[in-house]
Image (cartoon, rainbow, N blue to C red; front, side):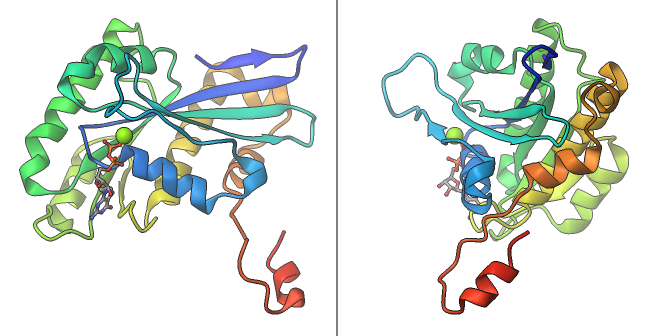
Length: 232
Ligand SMILES: Nc1nc2c(ncn2[C@@H]2O[C@H](COP(=O)(O)OP(=O)(O)O)[C@@H](O)[C@H]2O)c(=O)[nH]1
Ligand SMILES: [Mg+2]
């Protein structure tokens, strides 16, 4: 649930990366962490299911300070995909403002994707979130692997459904920031319709997007002049 604190001048949104086990949810967060400017993101906390814990999820905040003086924070979560961790998924999904559904493109993972999608719809309802109105984008990950669903089939899925679809290979970072931008925009627009964010916060969609997609410009400095030119 979006948190708007007018006294503290703070906005907090929650975006959840959902999907079957091993589809690449953690890998997406790791890529975002790697590709983003250090001053736009916090620590990536990965709680692995190989440990003996009761709650498993990954968490990373991204943030900026708007020109109007608001601290805008987006908390990114992943859920554990394994069937047995349903209660964790339900808890992590609580109060979600947007969802990036990470599907595994491998043909043999089709039913795992479908099961996870149905499980998500069910958990949304249990949490009192309307599955028809929460912003959702779908990423078909692992496009680099052989034996994945062909592009034309994915394009067909895109034509039939209402969710924006992105193709990715999260392991190399390809398509990750596009997916992230997709869910950020959709979430911003939906929240703006509901709560007049632009008016209340004096923040425009482009300011929100551009600040949350600030790239990591770090690279070997061979030519100091070039290094400063690359920055904004
Ligand atoms: N080939 C390939 N492997 C990937 C890709 N994304 C993730 N993986 C691998 O898939 C496995 C599961 O990824 P992980 O992010 O832990 O999945 P999660 O369970 O959804 O968090 C890991 O071995 C990743 O390296 C990808 O785009 N291509
Ligand atoms: Mg994971």
